[in-house]
Image (cartoon, rainbow, N blue to C red; front, side, top):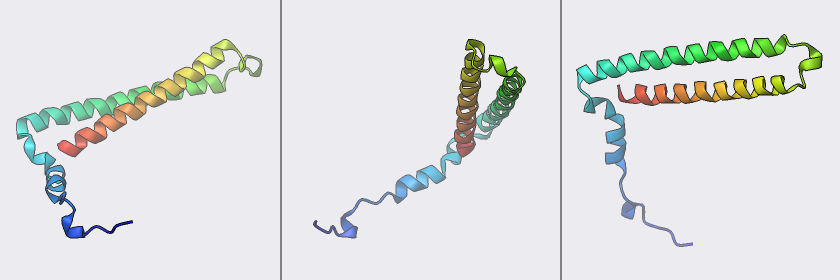
Length: 100
């Protein structure tokens, strides 16, 4: 295995600088608008999470003899789907935070 001289490797510092300075590429008016979008995303995540919690509570209160039913399976799928939605919204919010 050949050792490469570290001085011959490309420098990525300019890319890291751009990533760290992403906040600077958006003017204040648009940043404020994106701040509102961030608030909407955070609220949407809370709402979907609340619905997910309610659905889980409904599943927990389902009689034992119905816990292997088609309806129960569909409720489980809905809870999983809602969890994925919350994760996606939170990821979008995190990405938005990086640029504002």
